[in-house]
Length: 80
Image (cartoon, rainbow, N blue to C red; front, side, top):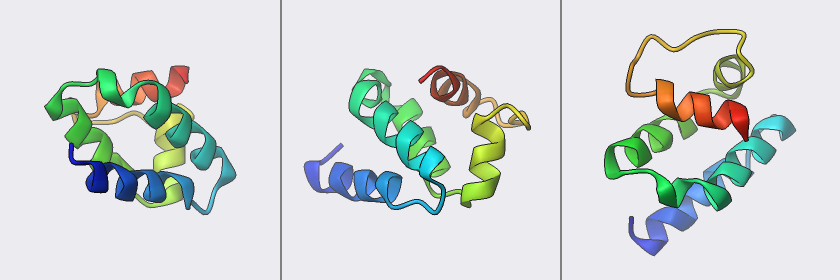
């Protein structure tokens, strides 16, 4: 991922309406994003575009993903 794209993604992770998402997404971006393969990175980028409350329900375990591409990312976010 290009540096400029990474910085835009970081901005999207930090500027959330829910503080909990700020923390979880930014922590993961700083500590786990670079360990993902390209497909997983793309899945994370897509998740970062979700509405805050929908994404929080997924990360907090209130809902499960039906998309198998998101499952490994969601599992890692839940641990972070």
